[in-house]
Length: 177
Image (cartoon, rainbow, N blue to C red; front, side, top):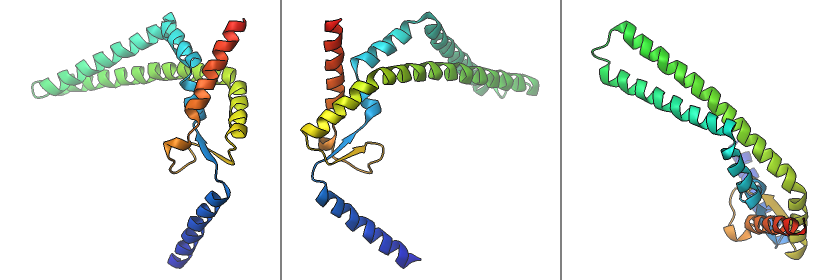
């Protein structure tokens, strides 16, 4: 078993170097980061934060967190002087605040995910064209997703170039409208 593992590891190691021999122009991209770093995404999240319903959920979450923290501090500070019933009631209140907070945070996360999805849907066609153009221009032979690479030198990343090109395309599009 140990020999099989060592043999497989050696083949993978040499296979990796053989791959790099064939693919001299390797690049890595984090498509999600490329999209989320654009001005379009930043504007979308700013608009989300300004929505009254979303802002209300964020405020509710802050209040629930503060109330839960206050109850936990009271319990910790006064635990020796409280009766078992009072301790149980405080613990119940803390649990209820935690459950309510988790629910509100779930709703906030869902709204953020919707925003990410909307921005990705809007920018994906342009991003794919930009990536294809960069593959041709840089003569990229192997393009890896950043989440799939075990290690990469930042110099092989085209993420920022894609973000810049997406921002440039958005500016050009807004000027033609």
